[in-house]
Image (cartoon, rainbow, N blue to C red; front, side, top):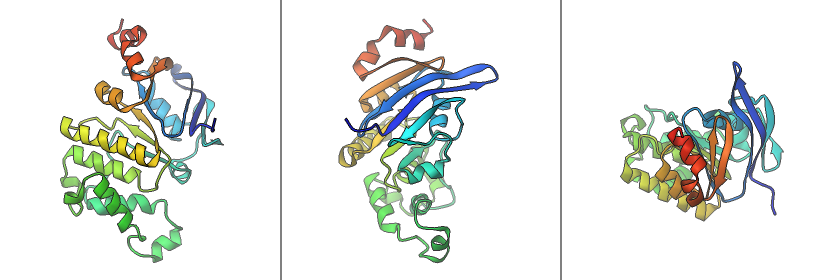
Length: 248
């Protein structure tokens, strides 16, 4: 069996005596779509930030494609094939959709010198246009990102995450604030990308219907620990999970 794309080993993180993440370990295989769910305060965001280098865990390690990456910055992870979307949108409102997506690609292209003296678009317009078409944003290509609806900006944010051709993408609440029609389109685009490119996804999400219909496996956190994991149909019927969400 090939090495996991992502391996989380015994991650713990404490804030002021409160253990937000308590010895969490799991692996994600190539092409898998893993959901990470749990009630508010369960440690999901802290765990995500430990994986992405925004927080340094007190204990444990994170490996991407067998390379230890604990504490590495987002830009370093990008070069190792890790992309992400944010719970809070990262688009630049005064730039066009096209320029936002090109800018995301420029972070991973060439050297500082080549970016200063090379083509203004770093030769990335064609690639950006492919993603614009893939996410069905052609009609918004030249619009300022700030003029778009929240859901449309979410799609732009997703397209930006794919500009570096990542092998692993971490999605932070992609369904938040998105209407049902656009949400169905986003789910379909993610499933298509996963099928066509074999890209691995890890998804934090509160929208249970979205995560249950998107993910192939789900991990449930409560009080910083994994309390259940398995396919969506098992998680949906698991009494421990039901009690955690209902305060049982």
